[in-house]
Each structure stands twice: as structure tokens, then as C-alpha cells.
Amino acid sequence: MEDMSRLYQQHAQTVYKFLLAQCRDAHLAEELTQETFYQAIRSVDRFNGSCKVSVWLCQIAKHLWYQHLRKHRREAAEGPPETVLPSAEEETLAQEGQLELLRKIHALSPDAREVVYLRSFGGLSFREIGDVCGRTETWARVTFYRSKELLRTGGTKDEK
Image (cartoon, rainbow, N blue to C red):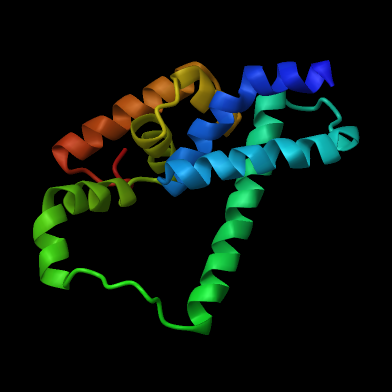
């Protein structure tokens, strides 16, 4: 049990940041982080050491995030939401700058987009991003820099 406690202390922040970058909801990220470690305990015998522990944990977290999304889509399809949403005009006026930035980020290549999300919204270090993506810290730094340049100049993922 001591080993699992140490594992949690070493990797909980990385898993939480990864999930926060994915869902952008602190409460949900915390809940999924706890579930990640629960699932890790249940399947620790299947960990073969072929990757870093942090990568293995983030893979479990990603799987749980996808499960959450599938469940949420099913529930949304079953009935209309009960909450009152602001009008489209109000939403657009309130988030115009943010929406434009998100459109530009969305136009990036998948790798670049993931690095920008993990760094900007998840607050992960370049080393953590490299670990999560199965790449090096240098790759994460270069990808983030190039992505920022594309966002600044208005370039797209198809440019070399």
C-alpha cells in the first residue's frame, strides 16, 4: 500500500493536469484522477513496464475521459437539458476573442493542437507533455514554439 501512496504522490499532479487539459473542468478532472488511480490499482498486474508509469496512468485517464464523453453523449441524446443557456448573440459577444483563438488552435495539426492544449490549458511542463505524448521534452518545446508562431502569423497546419 505504501508503494501506491508514493505512486499517487509522484504522478497525481501530472494525471490531473492532463485531464484538466482534456475536460477543462477542475471538479471533473479531480474525479477522473481519483478514478484513474483506482483503475490503476485494479490493473497493476497488467502493467508490463514497456512505458513510463506516468504514460500508463495518462492512458488510463484518457480511456476514462473517453468513457465519460460517451456516457455524456448518450445522456444528452435521451432528453433535452434542463438548464437555460445564454442566447447565441450573448455567447458570441462574450467570447469572441476566445473563440477566434480556439478556431486557430483547432486548425493546427493534431500533435500541435494537443501540445498547445496541454501547455496552455493544462499547465503541463514540456517534460510532462513529452511523457504524455510519448516524445521528448525537446519535441514538446519545438512543437509548442512552432504552434505559437503559426497562431501568431495566422498560418495553418498544412504549411511547412
